[in-house]
Amino acid sequence: HLSGFTERNGVWYAEEIPLTNLAKEFGTPLYVYSKKALKEAYEAYDRACIDAKGKRRARVHYAMKANSNLAVIDCFKNLGAGFDLVSGGELARALAIGAEPSSLVFAGVGKSAAEITQALKAGVKCINVESIAELHKINRVAKGLNCRAPISLRVNPDVDAQTHPYISTGLKGNKFGIAYYEVLKTYREAVQLSQIDIVGIDCHIGSQITTTEPYLDALDKVLDLVEQLKKEGIIIHHLDLGGGLGIAYGAETPPDITEFTNALLDRIDERGFAHLDVILEPGRSLVGNAGVLLTQVEYLKPGTEKNFCIVDAAMTELLRPALYEAHHGIVPIEKKSAKSVIYDVVGPVCESGDWLGRDRALAVEEGDVLAILSAGAYGFVMASNYNTRPMPAEILVDGKNAYVVRERQKLVDLFAHEKVPTK
Ligand code: LLP
Image (cartoon, rainbow, N blue to C red; front, side, top):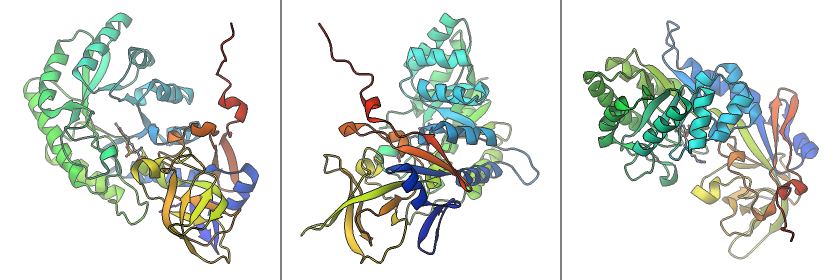
């Protein structure tokens, strides 16, 4: 499942480059992405959106929160992707690579007036509204700008995506979207607002979802709303089903992309909504397995309870294990003769929650480099400067070439914007 990364005779490669070469040249911790893997993942998704007769049934808007490096989003833009955004910062990134504003949808529960202004001025395709208060704020901002605001209401369908509670978003106890029972009422309200154009409806039920059923449940509930709205003369043009399709970090078996999209798109057709434009917002499933994080072993620290393998990456580079107890495969990038020992792989940060892998059998010595697998999604983007640690570098590999797509942060840059007050 790591298509751009392969092991040949005990040596791990990113496409045509041994990972050891990258660690030597650019240092660790180091994020490495494979362009081939990004491309393959996108093309598989895009193919799954086109039927046997060549008719497009859905469009991919990459959720750039998963990995927003300019090189990554530029690659997807060139393949034809639109984008799903959640902040003014992400909008600025999209515009920086020359993405078409009409290919952008803007979600998020707490959009500020400044972000709404930015989105309306840019001319995004749609703002996905997550509360009644936000709808009114958008109307006010649009009035001030003397423009119209294309909107969709994000429905909270109250379905259980059966994923980690922190990444489940479609339950009524979650902060996301407009409560199911309030959606019709809110559309009726939207019709009355002077600057609002209703263009769509959307939902997103969570992330790292490994079965199709919760999607079909949410879809049916959303289509019920579209049906009712039509009866009332409120016409919906597009249906955005969000992202959330899981990947295999270990033993998970997420549905095949074509089977997944066919199940959803067929249901839409069967229920008589083939005329709707369908948007999908995958993030993780496009980038997760297209990246690894390289980290060097600093110390081996045997103990009575636990053996620790202390590495130079930490929760500051990859937060997922600390935050969700997420599992990532960890492998030495070159096989050594060392004897395999069970270690907890931990970072240098001053927190007991700072771990990257638990109870892993590893044959390693001090100075060896490990690859933390499936780190392309929600890796670098969730990195922080805690403990005044610099942000790692990011490399994009394309065949035999490696490009630095983000330089390692320099120590002086860590406090370059701070000031000691002077009298
Ligand atoms: N659309 C919306 C409105 C979203 O909120 C998200 C993700 C996506 C699309 C993309 O979902 P994906 O296909 O990547 O599952 N940091 C967590 C994941 C948070 C997901 C947030 N929303 C993690 O590391 O697992």
